[in-house]
Image (cartoon, rainbow over all chains, first blue to last red; front, side, top):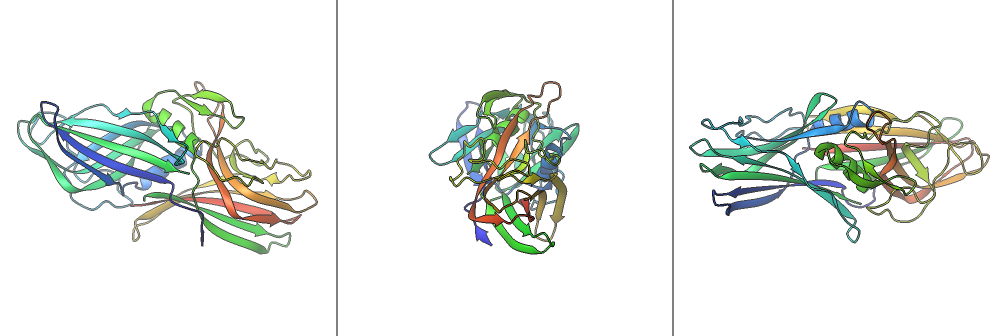
Length: 167
Length: 192
């Protein structure tokens, strides 16, 4: 096999915790290992005119199993709310793609914040994301965090996926 | 890394015999792909460039449709004779080979897209996009670049635009004799 150059689509995962004063108390950035077969299924649907990819939804969970190609959701998703073990889900936000013609790269970020109003600690160990194509949800990303993150009451977890292409 | 693409190229002579086969690791996605995926996810309009080099505003309902029918070279896998290295902002092939049987033209077959195949042992999966091009021009044709053009669709709120999403320069140009056909297949893989 002849090699033309380097890989083409990468995703990076940044997790950040801020306290009630807005101070960053934890930050890690990982190279995501995360696309699962749902991404291919969504792309297939888009390629074949079933519908376009829309409705992003980042989710967090407390599972500890290693992701596999056929995963259709988190192992143990944390529910939205202020009850015990719950987090308040913010809105998914995306930034306009940035192109760098010198390095032949382009990227956009996709983020969401999760606020702990449960009154106790909540530990997050897995992250994932859904999209929708023509009414069907596809689970496209699943990452197990190398180190679980424990959120104290009132702390906010921000998850950022940076999707990058290299030409 | 998590998503990669492979490019498989095969030349079949008029007797049905495979006379050339190569498999490359593609480097290929360009900014048009990212722009349209972003627009759909964010529900925001964004400026993109169509294959004619004209800027337009992407609709958040635009598709990334590639399954073109035969003799339609507006979208799907396309081929060319350019030799410039692809860049992130490419919006077309350098020298496009037209559909037809005239000089330096090739007949574009229909594009097929296969649904995902998964391997749970290796935690990998892939889909393929394939098209065959037949040379009935009367003489040999050299192909040196390959790409994928997507169509946005022309439904309500769709922009009816064609835009480049993949561009690859072949490490070695391929000469397709008259009467032979060229099969191009992109295999898009994920590894979990």
